Image (cartoon, rainbow, N blue to C red; front, side, top):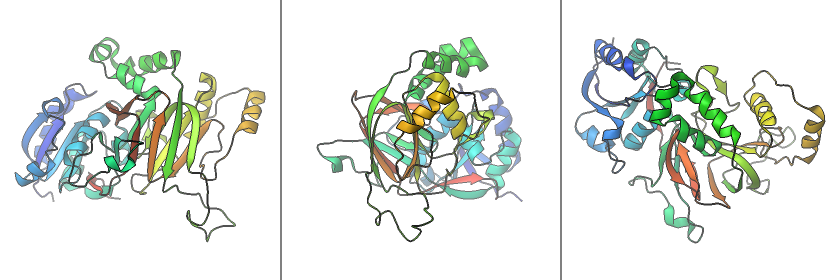
Length: 358
């Protein structure tokens, strides 16, 4: 039996299935939810966060009605407050909802918000990095981070240009459901390569049969990575690609670690093959002689989770990212919200989310 909850709904008219919002609101009310306010995300200023104020007004749940970008906007309002997040997945990809097994049907998603289980998930947080004074940007729990929180992914490189094209209103109107493929083709036509320097903290080593008794502190290692990268991706939620349901192996929203995936410079055919291997998709045909040469040149870091040449996958609690071309824009949950150089780390508090019972 549902217990009535006072909710605030944030939505975006540009979401992929925004036309289903009236149906979703009706479903919420039918489940016993009290909708106190319905607010477009663009009507809220970025500072200060409103979560504590909404809580004092008697709001219990803030519902993100849209895709991953809308969820990211809501998170940056309520992170650190007592409010829970509800998700009505009305976006195009809905990767965060898929990672939490939230149904895409509005009626079923509304029932999850009314009756679901509260799960406490990890959040990533990004802030500017000052090499001259690294401690100057330290996050205070009582303050809003200068760049923000993310639940799904932070990216530098290819995906930033992709987001710029794919979120353009004129592009969406022109291409409709073909917007994402069109944006991807445009990005791959002229990719930018960035020389990057990554500094890891709290790097997690994979289990080693002969060294089960050792911890990270017991085994000294170089916790840096320098390469020419097409993209650096900091992953929190493990599912990508919307209906393709690509899953990053070993990643979870509740593992208290961030997954760092770096794509080095190589041809588009190799990139496709690497991605297929990383996400356990059907393998693609590649030139085996070139592949053998790449394997021979690949330097395997002790913390690597991927044995794929030119593609790095590591797990850490924090990472500092600089490039030789700073400042470069970054995206948080698909929205451009900051620039390099920056520091990324796990937030010191979890986010309560209403999701299906396990």
